[in-house]
Amino acid sequence: MTRTRLRGDSGQAFPIYITVVAGLLFLAFAYLAVGQAAANRNGAQTAADAAALAAAQEFRDQLADQWVENVLDPTKWQAILDGEAPALTDPCGRAYELAAQNDATAECHEDGPRRYGVVATTNKPVGDSIIPGTESMRSTATATAVVEPLCGFEPLGEGATDDALPQLNCEGGDWTLDPDHLTQLPEPHDLFDVHLVADNA
Image (tube, rainbow, N blue to C red):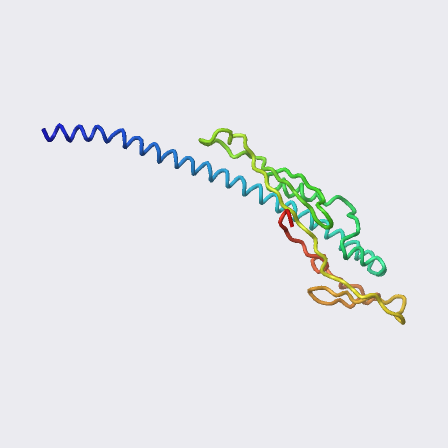
């Protein structure tokens, strides 16, 4: 009598065991799918950040080059140091290169004064998972980078010689410029800061 009851209990427990194992396996695959999607999304964000920074840094470098070319003409300094001088070539070209290096494609645009916005899309899809459609799903992310001026100057007053140059006052220190000895000039990172900002900032 006891043996018959034990066998019956064992037979009833087996389907429950199968159901529990199947449920655990489903959860494991679901977590794996979420992990795949998160990794793909992180890849898109990395590509977007790198591309936006690359575009802004390219614009910064072009501004710095223009300042060096016009260092003997302080009347042109203000527009350059304010970031109002136009880019000589499209800085977005660097954004496309950096996105490609991160296995993504990018859409880049000037997003206001000294700002560049990027939308990056991964080349690789999330991949096969238990969630339908992920085999062709690609992640997209956005990023915006800005160029911030770090330097200013006071125009020379009356009595200054025609070839004298104003002192350049930067957040990292002041630069006294001798027009006859321009061997040491500020680097692009001395003149401008480049950093990411929130898309709505």
